[in-house]
Length: 438
Image (cartoon, rainbow, N blue to C red; front, side, top):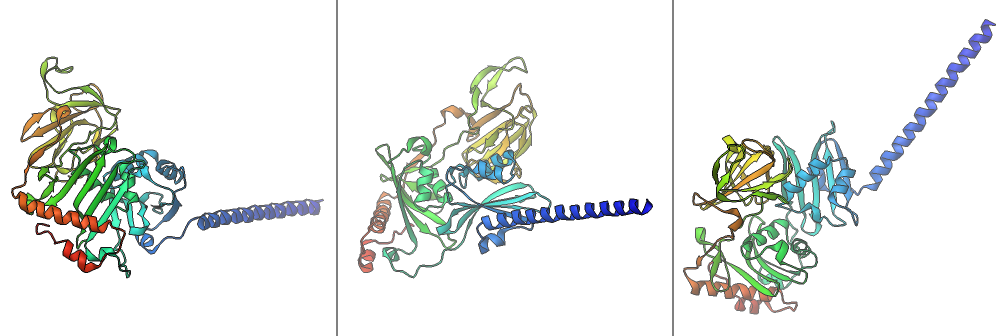
């Protein structure tokens, strides 16, 4: 009887052992198969991408038709609030809502699961990428440009080795048309800033509108816009670079200069809850007082954007304004932002920010009855109404004759570079005299 009991017990232990081993074996096979499938479904990383990666896990995804950046990053386990923060952070460099099928996205995470960086391929032909990486103060966005390999094939552009010519027509929007024409995102933003006083690119430019751009390739590899022509709504806008030092700028064909300074709305989709007035009843103080600002009501946490590029001259607590930022754009204009819940990562006094960069988030700190942004504009130290600000136009050039010679030489270059026919280089050099003022 005892022998039979021991035999049954031993048999049961052996069955349990074999069953456990089999389950573990099958689980190992499944895990290995899943890992192998995931690895084989991803395209191999380039040397540049491998050098940018951090220790930990690297996931690679190629954008498919119909996919949005939010869908893709959510599928890669990136929290939606972080995705929205990245979109605002990248906006001055590249609009993430405009990702196209075929673009490659790389996400790096640390061994502990922390998201370290995201790299988006923008232009494979020009080796440009957008990188958003973690730093001590939060995430930072930057454009990565790799030097292009010199071409061994002679072409018409050999006559102007330091020039580049771009042209295109609008199909969906200006930004996408610029990308399709081969322009870098930074160059597109610079072009928009030049004409920002004359036209609003998002609302003025429609399908069928055209543009031309001539640039100079600097030793650093960056491009400076020498001339541009935009046809929007049947109207032609032109800009030519002229002058030197502090007097340099962009002028139209009649030698009239535009300062090119215009302000963005600091809260997208924000509702105006209080306007600029010298007499408003203060809901907390209980008496009438000047309100030399525009209040934009929005949910707490809504991103606040820098209205234009500049240097932060103050970022901190300022009495009834709560969390407050003062941003100096140039010797003439300053904007301020009050009642914010908190500041964006890395924002502090002395920090230089770009137009459209997230600098904080809507709140109700200080004397506020609800979440909103107190937004003010100062010109030469005096307050002006933000709703009436139209941008500044400046005087004509001091030497019109020299400007027109420069403009003529630039127009010849643009005309030559857009010709599809081969023209002898010696004729090109005779036709286009290098402008003295460039």
